[in-house]
Image (cartoon, rainbow, N blue to C red):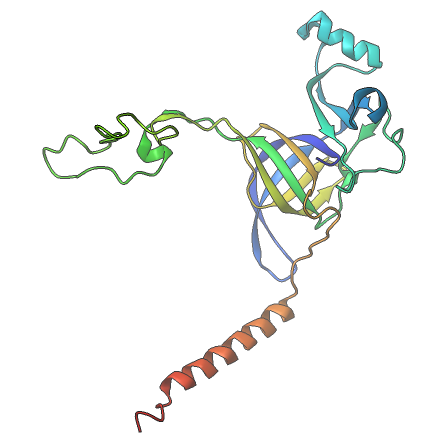
Length: 256
């Protein structure tokens, strides 16, 4: 995982680009985050930074947890997450002492139209049946049927004489850690610490999310395609379709 920020999902809306195209976006309040601890290769075996987000009163924390913040000389935070700094993933690798305890990170880490990865916890839906959890078709809808939403037969008799491990059954749904990769940043609002990401991200509103630089495409800037490129592509596709239709309409030599 590359360097990034902790934030909160504020909700979804839509924006328009320079050509009037409508895009669904998610607004994230990202940071500012403070570095609470820096792990280095020599004593810890790996490189990482621990980020603190959202200040909290000291009386709300236990003494062992509060002691960690006092030892680092920083204010206590509600959320603390550790991000590993792997080489080649957009993280600074020239010097292990580039990140310092107490350093504040803001949305200035990112650029407009940069690709990012977003990690969050999906919305919990509690205990659900198989039709909602696994999209079962269900039983007969006729009058008198007792198998409208029941699972039906899930095992066999002699062989193997048991239910296969991993069978899709009713159970807890949601509340899982989910990562969405290669989302494009539409707007970076430095003044209000906001990131506007194209598309949907996991989690409910006000849920904690982790926004990092793209792992698969670090530093890639993917701007929206210009309108002329789309027109030229549509013209090429229409010419190809017309040529294909002419070949289908023309009679074959064997038919003549």
